[in-house]
Amino acid sequence: MENSTPVMQKNWRSFRMAAWLGWKIESNWTDPFLFAIYSIVKPLAAAMILVVMYGVISRNQFDSPVFAYLFIGNAFYQYVSNVMVGVSWAIVDDREHYRTLKYLYVSPISIPFYLLGRGVARVLITTFSVVVILAVGVAFLHIPFNPAVIDWPLFITSLLIGILMLAMLGLLLAGFTLRMAQYSFNIGDSVAGALYLFSGAIFPISVLPAFLRPLGYIMPISYWLELIRRAMVGGVAADFPMFPGFSNLQLLLILIGMTIIFGFISVWGWKKFDWQARERGLIDQTNNY
Amino acid sequence: MPMLPPVSKRHTGWRLFLMTVFGRSYPRVIGAQRETSWVFFDTFLPMLSVAAYVFVYRAIKAPEDYVGFVVVGGAMMAFWMNVLWSMSSQLYWEKETGNLALYIISPGSMMAILLGMAVGGLFATTLRALGIIILGSLLFSVHFVVASFWQLILVFLLTMVALYGLGMMTASLYLLLSREAWHFSNLAQEPIFLVSGFYFPIKNFPAWVPVIGSIIPLTMGMDAMRQLSFASGPSLGWVSVKIEILVLAGLAVVFLIAARYLLSYMEKLAVREGRLTESRG
Image (tube, rainbow over all chains, first blue to last red; front, side):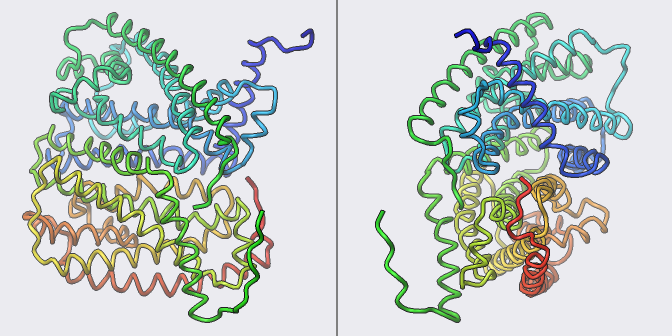
C-alpha cells in the first residue's frame, strides 16, 4: 500500500483535529467572556457546596488541615469528572446529538485517538477552573499556598501522568458507552460520582468502612490525588496521610505502573466494546426518550 | 414493512389530549425497562456519590440527621436532573433530532406533549429516587421521625407539580435557544445544588439566598420535607411548613399557567422566526 498514511501520522492527525473540534464545540457557542464565566461558575459552585457543608458543622474553622485536605482534593477531582467524562461523552455527542459517529467510522481516522483528542478541550477548561478554585481558596478560605515550598517537579509529573491515566479511563468508559446505546447519557457522570467516594478526594480512605477501603487502594486516582497534595501542601498531606508507608517516589512509581496497567485494560476494553457495538449495529443507534 | 392501518376515527378535545399525554409518556416509561442497567447507573452509582457526602459529614463529625439530609437531597436531585435534561432542554433536543417539527404538525397539543414528558419522566424518576431513599436509609441507618405523614405527601406532590410546571415553562423558553441550551442546563446543576441546599439546611445562608433560591420549588420543598421527616428538622428549617406549602401551591399555579401562555407565545415566535427546524448543531 504505497499511498497509505503511516499509522503514527494518522493517529496524530486524528488527535490534533479532534482536539481542535472539541475546543470549538466547547467554546464557540458564546462570546469568550461568557464562556470564561461559565467555566468558572459550575466548578466553583461545586466547591462551595463542600465549603458550606464544612462551615456549617465546624462553625467556619477554615484554617483546619481537614478543610485544606477536602478543598484541594475536590478542586483536582474536577479533572476526573471532566477529562474522563469528556472523552466518553464524545460518543454520546457524536452518536445522539450530531449523528456523525457513523461518518467518523467510515473516514480514515483512528477512533480512539479521535476520542482522546476530544478530551483535550476539557483538560484546558478544567485547568483554568482548578486555578480559579484554588485562587478563591487561598484568597478567602485560608488554603495554604506557598510557591517556594511546592515540590514543582513532583507536582507537574504527577499532574501529567494523572491526566493521561484519566484519559485512558475515559477511553474505557467510551467503549462501554458505545456498547450501551440506550440510557448511555448518564454513565460518565454516574461513574465519576461513584469514584468520588473511593478516591479519597474529600475524606481519607480510612473513613470508609474497612470492607470498602480496598476499592480505594486499587484505584490510581487515590494515588494521584495523594501525590498532588504531597507536592502542593506537604503539611496537610502529612496530617491525613492516605499511604503513610510509601515515599513520594514509591507513590509515583505505583501511579506510573497503574497508569500502564489501566492503559492496557482500556485499549483492550475499547477494542472489545467497539467490536461488539459494530456486531450489534449500535454505532448509529439513537433513542428519543 | 407492514403498513399501519389508516386512522378510522378522528379524536379531538380531551380524548386527543389524553392520548397525546399517554403517547409521549409511553417511551419514557417503557424505554427504561429495555435497558435494565439503569438500575445500576441511575440508582446505585448516584447512591455512591451521595455516600461520598455522607462520609464527609461523618469525617467532620456532623450530627447524624445531616446524613439523612444528604440522602433526601440525593433522591430529590434525581428530579432536578430529570426536569433539567428531560423537560427544559427536551424541546431543544427534539429540534436537534428533527422531532419538534413532527410534534407541531401533529394534531396533538404541545401542552399535552410536555405533560406526557413530565408524567413519563416523573414515573421513571420516582422509581430512582425511591431506590436512593431506600438504599441510603438502609446503608446509613437514617432515622426518620415523621411529624405529619399527610403534610409530607402534600409537600412532595406540590413540589413535583411546581417543579414539573417550571420544567414545562422553561421548555418553551428553550425553544428559542440553540446550542447554548445545552450549556445553560449544564450550568443549572451545581449552582442550584448549592443555593437550594441539596446537602445542607438552607437556613445557614443569609436570608436573600434562599429567597432567590425559592424560585426553584425544590428549595422550599426539601426544607419542608426535612422539617417533617427528622427530629432536628424543625430547628434547622428556614420558614414554617405552612408557609412553604402556601408558596409551593402558588408556584405550582403560576408555573403551570405561565407554561401554557409561554408555550403558545414562544411557538408562534419560533414559527415566525423560522427556528422550529433550525439546527445549529
